[in-house]
Image (tube, rainbow, N blue to C red):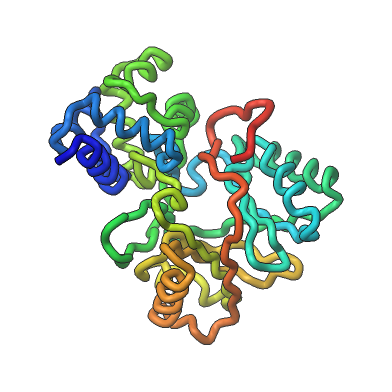
Length: 333
């Protein structure tokens, strides 16, 4: 097999198989190399290539909701002629980690994260002042499924609903948590730098990460991929207006359906009656709609009022910042 084909195969296997079960060892890339029949340097180079191509956002942790810091989903109704300018202003805030145009009157949707609620409130007030547009704030009440791992080969499979709220990250561990969300350096002993910064042992670092995984505080640790770059070019957010005494049961049922990557309950807002949300990612609009309809039917939600908002444009997609202080500036991506 030509070298180019072997390198491409290695990249694809890494993207597909190292999103979870990433080796928590002092030399994780060597462990992956043994698994894939490659050399350590080839695995590191494949990760570097994936990062340069934008397919890999980082190698690190994905936190469960509510285990540290604060996050808020926000929406704005922006006049079409102002959309790009307003989106650029929103994306420039370093706390904003996702920013999308969606098909709706509320056409700009973004997530803002931070180490606490006060910085988020201040940032949103500033955005409202600078744009002269209101920001609809949609606070999460309960997560039912959080899983943005993508299997590149298998069709969508059923998942499981979150059964309990995992423990929060203790203040003594915030420094390590900040490193986990920033991601590993691409070098043979990537945890060594963390150990030097923290003044502890490698065993202690790896044990704490494993403990977070075991309790659900970390949803996963491994390659964090960007869905557009790995072929999932369509995504739809569907929102439902569910009676409050039924939403938890229906949300848990929806969360287990094939193709559902995110599912959670949020507070309603003025002019926005919806309280149950789910996300479906697909390789095409048609595939996404088919997965969505099957999930709605199986969960018994076909008769419930709903709206489906496909994304049109991605203005920014970066990692959340629950534990890292915000830089003074940030570039939109």
